[in-house]
Image (cartoon, rainbow, N blue to C red; front, side, top):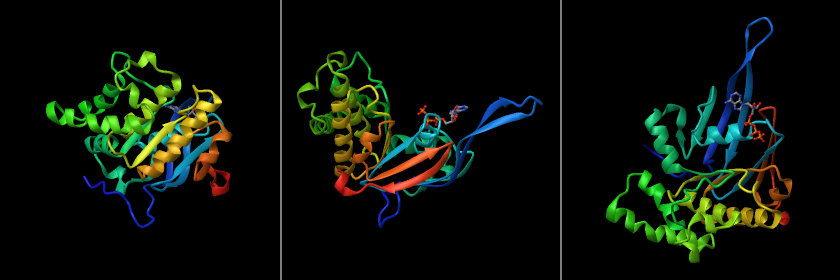
Length: 250
Ligand SMILES: Nc1ncnc2c1ncn2[C@@H]1O[C@H](COP(=O)(O)OP(=O)(O)OP(=O)(O)O)[C@@H](O)[C@H]1O
């Protein structure tokens, strides 16, 4: 599969006229009703840039993230990720693209309580099929990422001995293990207090530049938009504005 990083200003994430229609029960006359979670959405995210995705509850933010992450197939439209048209891939190729190209960061860090911090990162390689010596060689990558997110002294700690902010850092480091081109975060700060939320956004901003990923962060908190390069606002499944964030705001 060709998943070469895009260059020359081509967007790493490029969605054209994407709609996602769900069944939504029946009308009183018995005919099926539908809801457009996404309605002809055009969306681009560049490598090395952080996009903040905002909008009211139910406006389609998580749906958009799911489509970008190839977790959900849109009903219509084109989704290009890292130069690959994901609509043209079969299921196995889509899974591979998810594993190789996309890093996912969820609201609540879904970490495995029995494992130490470093092993949380290595388990992703285990899932990619690495074993034995190959897996051991990845320890260095895991430790490098833990240092970058400020957890170098906690590699052997169990998850229950970490704070919420530290857990989210583990989650972020884990998402970077596969060297993704796209980093998707669905409300990564919702379980954190204000200072910790700003720390996590600052970290995501730094990592976006350092790893040259196209990062898309869903947030309810407009105070966190200052860490983004672009702000995209959704309403009723439609993109209602796409704005550059001025450097002076950061
Ligand atoms: N699997 C589904 N089946 C039917 N409708 C769905 C499904 N997923 C989402 N929807 C609908 O699509 C719309 C967009 O939902 P989505 O979760 O993307 O919004 P959101 O902006 O992320 O909301 P929130 O901020 O509350 O998480 C909503 O009206 C929702 O009810």
